[in-house]
Structures are given as C-alpha cells and as structure tokens.
Image (tube, rainbow over all chains, first blue to last red; front, side):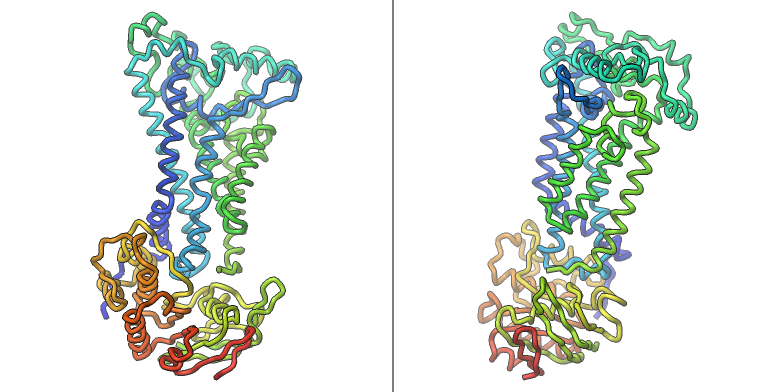
Length: 371
Length: 210
C-alpha cells in the first residue's frame, strides 16, 4: 500500500496539529479575548484624549500596562488595583489554561501516542502556548493601531473634556500617588524625578539605566532638548470643533514629552520597544508556560487560580521575584528607581524560569500515568 | 511484532490493579481478555500502549522496553474508551488532523478506513451531530487508519448495532490476516470466543489463560 507523507518532522506536524486543534478548542475564548481587548483599547483611547494625557499607540499601550507604583500601606495612601493590566494578563492566562490538559485526557491519548515521544507532545504544547501568546499580543497591537488611527483622524473633541481614567483624571491621580510615595520614601531620588504628573523631564538617571543606555545606544541629548514641548497641539476649542487630534500615530512625540508622568527621554527607541513590548510578552509567556505545567499536574482551574494569584501578588510586592513587576511600566527602574526591575533581569529570570519549567516538565511527563 | 510482559504489576493509591502478569504475545493473533469491570483489563491495555507505567516488571515490544527505550509502541492503533473528537469538524476532518501527526497516512487510506466501518468519508455532518454508534465507528476507523502493527481494542462493540458489529468482526479478521497483533477486551464471552485465538480470564488484576 503506498504511503504518502503528509508533512515533515514529527514535532513540526505536532505543532501544526496543536495550532489547529488548539484553535478549534479555544474559538469561543478568542471571541471573549477580542471583546475584552476592544473594551480596554476603547477605554484607553477615550482616556488618552484629555489634553493633558498623551495619545497614539504608545500612549494607549502605556495606559494599559502602566500598572501602579509600589504600594506602601499608609492611612492616607490610596490603593488602586491596575485593572487594565490585570485583566489583559488574566485574559491570556484564561485562554491558555485548559487545552493542554484537555488534549491529554479528552482524546484518550490519541495525540500523545502519535507524537512518538512524550516530550515531543509536551514541546508541541509549549509551542502552542508561545504561538497563542504571540497571537494575543499581535491582536492587541492591531487593536491599538486601529484605536490610534481612529482617534488621530476622528477628532473626538467633546470627549476631551470628559475623559477620565477609572474615576479621576490621570495627572491628578498620578500626582497623588507621587506625593504618597514621596512621603513614604524620602530621599531616594530627587524631588524632580518623582514629579510623576509633571511634564518636566526627569533629572536623575539611575546608574543601571545609564549603563543600559551605554550598551543599547545613548539618546541624543540635543535631540531631546530641541524637541518642542508643545505636544498637545489642539486646544480644547479646536478639539470641540472636531479638529484632527493632537499627537502622532505612534505617540512618540507625546511620549518624549512625558507619558502619564513617565519621562523616558533618556530611553532610545530600542529600549522603548524592549520595555513596552518585549517585557510584557516575556512575562506573559513565562506565566502561561508555568500555568500549562500546573494544569497538567493539577487541573486547569487550579492552575489558573494559582497563576493569577501569583500575578496579583506582583501588585503588592515590587520585587523581581514576582514577574508581574516587569510588565508594569510604573515599576520599571527608570521610573521607580528600583534597579532590579530592568530588562536584563527580566530576560534572565524569564529565560531561567522557562528553562526550569520545560526541563522539569519533560522529566515529569515521562512518568505521568495518562487515564 | 512480539510483546513480552514480565512480572508486570501496577499499584495505584495502594491498590494493586495488576499482579505479576506474565505473557508473550505475537503478531497475527487475537488475544481476548474476559473479566468484570475493574478487573484490570483496561489497565493492562493502557500499560501495553505506554500510557501508564508499571510499578514492577517490564513490557518489551520487539525487545525494546516501554518507558525506557521507547515511550509508545510504534505502529500502534488503539480504541480505549469512548472517543472524543472535535465537534465542529467532520469525521474525515478529525481523522485527517490526527493522521497528520505521524504524517504517514494518505487521504485515501483514511477514507478507506471510514468506509470499512460503514461511515461515509464525504459526509459533511459535524461530529457533534453523530450518534454514539457513529462516534464508536469513527473511533474504530481512527484505530485502523494507519495500518497498525498493534491494535488495542477495549470494548469496541459498545454502542454498535448489528451491522456495525458485523463490520467490526470483518475488520478484526482482516487485521489479523494482515499480521496485526490484536488485544481485544469484551464483555460478550461468545463474541470473544469467536474472534480470539487466545483468551485470558482476568480477575482482580490476575491474568490466567482460559
């Protein structure tokens, strides 16, 4: 009987199987993801339209992933859970929670016996998780691009006077956080660098950041100094008249002038890309792979609960041991002054964590009884 | 293909579900397992398939130990429980997706397997509209579509009508003639006696030749 090879190596075909089967199994969840992402991107677009707050893709992305500064318990301090950051991460964890375990048990082992080796099956699942994380962030990027296009061309003037972010205008809220932090931690950084509501550039540069800048390419001081501070080009009356929105599509001009109190004028474009995009993706990938292993060992619901709990713990502890800190912009070293929350540490910790999870997982799956 | 089980035992949560199983199984024969629910038939089948590991002893397939030299027997086709397929795909679509993992089976062979079980390869109905008997037939097609050298069938007659049973008997006969090693668990003693070359009686994890 003539045999025909339908595809290449076993692992490649397994990945293709997982992409197909996994997508079929999670179709309804993807619909939920689209709705959640759309909601938060629309919220970001609305909130970024106040004259004081920057827009463009970076502005919207910063709104979503700003997180919150390090929390210190005090009588006057206000705790606000960073809902967009938490929800977007939780959505992705929900998306990847159940398929690997379902494939193992629901199909009665049909896929794993065809994989030839148990570790091939596990690597196929890990590849599926990585593809899902990548697709999630690509979808988010597309939604942000669409939001930036719409807001940059629609001229939503009336919204400018009504935009709030979770109950209060951003600069005031950020300024309140800043003063709470200043009262709790005097003397860490010059006062100017803590002015999170101020558009003035930060004067202090943490040492690690200076070293990173040297490695990744120094920003041009002349370029920064000569850039116009008039980032919000449209006056309220212009906006009311429906004039094109201020700011550029990417939001880089707004970004350079300050972004929710983030004054990243010392960062290069490459560093901005690493901090704003690569870090959240790395963190998400690590959490999702961990959740996958937990779902195989325990059950999907418990795995989701534990991973979400660990992620939420990042809100309370600004430590590199809680990976969620690396995806919160306000916890980054160039803003918070905590040198441990930097890209280098993120890359190292995530890489190490993923390697341990996969190695442990491959050993564990060899001995697991499949019922 | 030759399977040798040597002092095979399995313990789960303190209970011994397989007790010192010794047997040699060879190609071109049907080995029937007869026993009550929970006697250990399915557990042995899972162990032969490589899905569970023995607490003691070894299972060697052509001289290679399962769980050490290889994770699963090569050329394995199995039907171990009520099969679950993607509900939004056709029967053929589901089998094609699974066959693509090994990448050794042509579409014509998948269609032939479906026809042998009485299913129409061109049926555009999604699996969610299949009856229990149709899903069982699809599971059997899934087990035989890749021309297995080892065929493990646990209660394959469940849910089948008279026509389905007849077709399945024909499939088992043809696979045996093609040199396949077949493990068959069934509650129906008469069916087992008709189809099997050897019958093992299973009671509380102990296998004895009937």
